[in-house]
Length: 393
Image 1 (cartoon, rainbow, N blue to C red):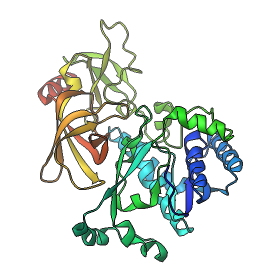
Image 2 (cartoon, rainbow, N blue to C red):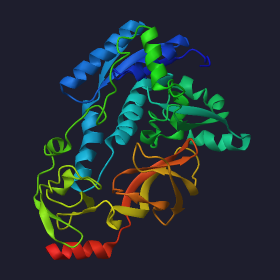
Image 3 (tube, helix red, strand yellow):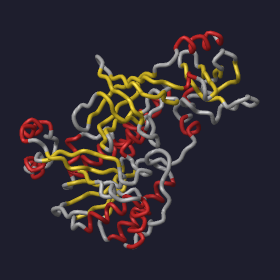
């Protein structure tokens, strides 16, 4: 890792090994590092994670604080999460959590507290790109965010380059999918120290420097909440409403307790015994409260065209051919992005399995993260859908 000028860096420490090693790298470079644990969810798990982060900070010999963003998390993330599911959509709370909490209120508070930069343990790379001189004056207006005066005075230096985000070296752990909402103007003030390292290398370094969480298992589930059973979590705010489960011919196969508790492509929880072949959720009709299910070979489970809104470009707008992910673990899918009047259309080379409204569609050009948007419509065989629903009603 190259050495950079000494600065005050607030490192988000989740309790996991990645964020702990990120803090270690920054300390090794000579920065004044402050570890911060964000408390966003009140249950027993957060106390365990908080203690893990505190022990790691103690082992590194850096100051440590706990910042309570539980109100902001409830207002900005959970409220949206429940609302989207009520509407039959499939939101990604991790994307919203990054936007509103880690790179929203945490970023802002860190700068107000005196940070020059913030850092996280995300597996993603930040690349430095030379900015053409003719663009610097144009960009200077865009990059005026609410920073302390001493940071604003460095804008001219920052404007000599622009930054891009790219996939992590460890493709199995790459988290760029969750970061498409980041704004280019904040990238100069964020460090991602572990993006060039594999997970195995991160653990090896953690063990070598004596971090107590070097062999801690990776966290799973929702951002700051962990692994959950979705129906039990949703029923706190989303009332159960029984409806019919039908096949493509409109034959009633069973009952569901609420379409909000299912997502496109899901098989688990349908409780459809005695079927010759497995059936999956192909369509959720919020008007009639009906689930249409179909075998995996059915065209109803696939779409070649999606419509996307709420686009964020990390760099300049990029239309035409690119790689698209509509799920975190998915390989890049070849597609063409077309700009329409008030939204964008994604035309895929191959039909995509069970895309869902509310999902994030994330755009790539080779390794570079270009940006992303929210799926607002999925093009399907509406005649077949209407025929199946009509049989019920």
